[in-house]
Length: 508
Image 1 (spheres, helix red, strand yellow):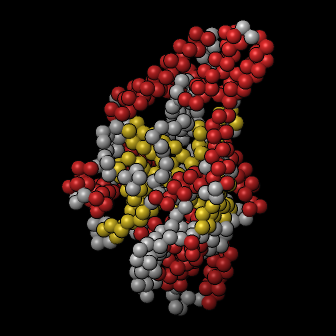
Image 2 (cartoon, rainbow, N blue to C red):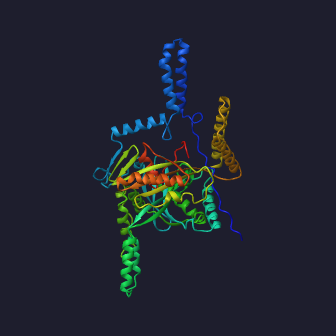
Image 3 (cartoon, rainbow, N blue to C red):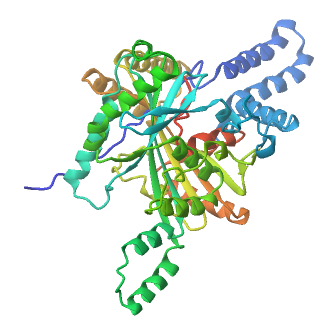
């Protein structure tokens, strides 16, 4: 049989949440105020006041339409003022350890900075005799379970299997695009980590034959000493977030409260095992509370990764008691962090996070993200792609709203005599294609992606950022540094905790 052609993917459509066209509510107010101020000299018949009114009107127009590194000028000013207020009040600083709060019983709970402070780590039975860690957000009424997954990859397999696995992942996402579905968010997180070879040495010691030749043992030791510390490994996590508000009847039937919500989430993750397998994903483990704590700790303190990896390898030995693997949740948070305008400092490391503002305009293969995930020896990279499944009724409303906005923008262009650009024409074609696909039964998801680069040597930071931007360009992505909100971006880009995607936003 002839091998099928690789499937091409494209048609990502950016959300338009402007109050009118691409203008936000504040931007529209600035334009209206500019028009009124510009007309004021005409109504007052005071032409001398035009020397003051026209410059002010021009300044307001610059604030509304001017762009600074991808943001409008008014948005940039708001970010800058908010950041300076946080610096003046020292809300950009976080200290734990001796300064961490303690519960009434004297225990020290998991202490996390910023938006993570609201999260609670719950212990729940996994239904198989074990325990699972669930991150509970009481503000959003969500519960998130995290699993570590492995996959055979797409680059080195034949086209048919590659297409089958990608279609399996699409079917998995489409299966959650249903009205009032309990699963409100699905996140895929991948990070590259340094590997000191501890796991390899531990496995070799356990499987070394007693009568192995001395020369072979010596050669193997030299090989591991040289190659082990220079290696990098990848970890991939899948986060499933359940909304207790959407699943209130099921939660009530399972006992109500946190216990009922955790039981419903465990039932949901067991039910999706088959669809994950069809997508080529193998669930290695659903993280225990200690496993979740270790993932958080290694993101804030990259240096702890090697020590924890060595201890976990030793825990796999015959004398393992079962309590030493992972990390105590009380130690999960960082000792100190500081949020700078374009940088996030945490426990001896520095992280810069980027938001993906544009996916490739042309059609691409399923492996187009490979350049971005390329391991580097001077930096650690992590990337999170967040999906929000949308039910058919809401998808119909969202697409209709987007279509109305585009039609209104087109009529405005026609009245002002401005020609339609090729980009605008392509966006209209993409919107029509998505509407037709939705009508034929396809699912619709909102998605966003964030990328982070972390270094332990500040002198390597700018080089690592430049390499990341070059690799993003090779992948056809348009990325933008998250100015003024690096701490919030870190919680999404560097941690697999299911954070991200507000109700409405501009961009991807």
